[in-house]
Length: 236
Image (tube, rainbow, N blue to C red; front, top):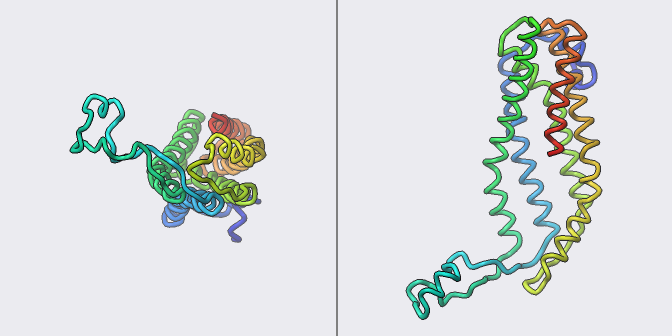
């Protein structure tokens, strides 16, 4: 069966294919690790587009209130400059490393939430199969999100114009310019996420129909409700 059958003919995919543990694990790992890779991609784009240095508070200097309370004290480091130059690339790289863990956690929450909602809903409706079946249906239905991720990174690459910043630059000005570059992408976000969650809902619908044994109306209602929940979450 062609790999795109899931995306374009989910009815046939779930009707003719049995679930295999290794395949489900592979898709889960792909989904989990693709988003941190996407974050690194965004970081790389920003590092390519934004060049220069900025002034930041010196992390090796005590707070101003502490230094005022201990004037003239060299041992405390208060003689160090209050601000230092930092390369933008370095700051972006450090920020990316700090959010990777949160991205992993967020993806795991999405997977668990989708599986729990589909399993609980189908259980209430008298669905067949166990939690493993619901998990598999949930994972397959999340595949369209990967295309949304690729589209978002690609559009970011095309929309962000190169900019050079200096310690004398007004950060408000170039941040306004950067946000202006991203405004079209932000305006299209509800549309893109709406298409993605609708796509996921269609896949979930046929998964619930064939693998959990729900009636067509029940499968449509449950899958549509879960897709709506995820779409609303993307708007927050």
